[in-house]
Length: 358
Ligand code: COI
Image 1 (cartoon, rainbow, N blue to C red):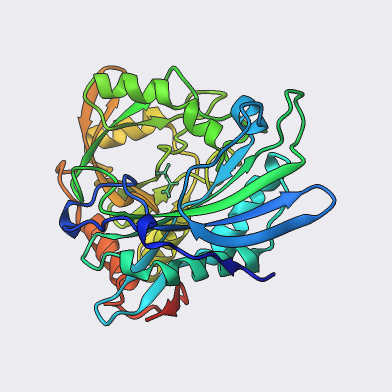
Image 2 (tube, rainbow, N blue to C red):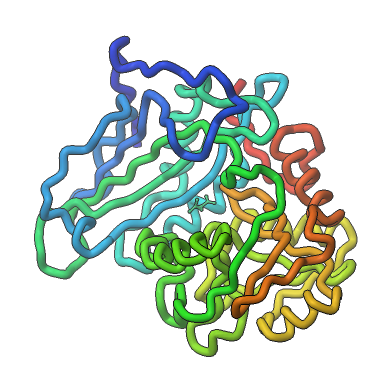
């Protein structure tokens, strides 16, 4: 499908950020966006890259009432030599369709997802920051725009992509965060939408997140929705624990997100000689192991969060320091290797980096 590029008038160009080191996460957006529509009986139509602008939407649109919405998150990087790359975007294209299928939205051809993003990022390349820890965050999204109040899948959708130059997700940067194990609210249940990247999962996490913030934590770690016993994910991150040279993470049971960074960490840790275990992690055993020092490191992984060390775990009102409470050696090694590949300093032996321009 042809993707038209609409003109960007001078008065629609935004002032650029002037200090890359001060970039926060997801607060500023580039000049252009991608928009493709899906209409019943026609399929995907009218693909265009246009100036970034607000939508004018009927207040009856299904997305506002029944949350038929999915999204993805991936990043573009600018290397020191000017090469522009994406990191494993095929995985996002594939996962986007798994999410679409789960909440009865049309599937988007993966080549169109990738081409749309590549064309847009190339046009907006001057917005990609180049310094360490910065990147261009890419947010593909699909919303249901049919104006009707009956509960049903929409007959009209917008697929759009916006771009945001970003720094670290956590204001603390690559420093240990404090996570509270949530034993009251749950994020997902078997058979639910936990594995899909749909906005509703995040909306329902806000209350627990706020309560945890009020107690001095950065985010919550969810337990499984049936027993409130097994570790699931953090919401913006999958979780990993190091027991010496064994790296442990929760299996993909259907109620946690199949993270691109999670998969990359497993492959990297394996290639660095660590033993891998994907197994149910019982919270009581985990806390005992943290207390006795058997758990030497904990960290989260995610596109936005990259690799984020976890220094403290709070559970049932008590705080437990993980390892030294600082950044562990394995966490640092994985962070350095992953970001080394992403920023072109370390050879990509996995075929993860997709070069899309200069
Ligand atoms: C990402 O890591 O890209 C995510 O989608 C998490 C997010 C909610 C910031």
